[in-house]
Image (cartoon, rainbow, N blue to C red):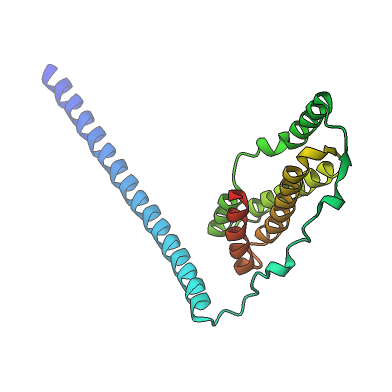
Length: 198
């Protein structure tokens, strides 16, 4: 009786091991299939990008190109609201206003260029829309900054900040069109990085 019980248990263990081996084999086959699909997709994307870049370098691209003349007009000091009052309290209030206006920009988690690259890689319009949302934020910030009365001693820095944000808004608008006008978007991204460095 004990022998039959041991044989029965042995057979059950053997069947269990065979079953687990088959599951492992099917998992390996499934993983290999998924890996092959991923590699195929990556190769296709790589070929698209190489072809795209090759056309640009060869000058045979029919895509529209970025035109720096499309950037918005740079504002001058005449476009700002100026206060002649340079008292400490005035400058302090100005600083508080600017900090409040710029606060939403500090909450942006990703650079528009990173988002654009991801949108292009995945052909994802929702990612491109994030850039359009950032563009609206940049423009809204410019509009608010133009309403602030600027102490005379701070005009230059205020003007530089506004002009940079205006350029960023314009370039972000181009970058949000990465899926329809990729060359303009990529060239705008290069300019965008330069504007961040200013």
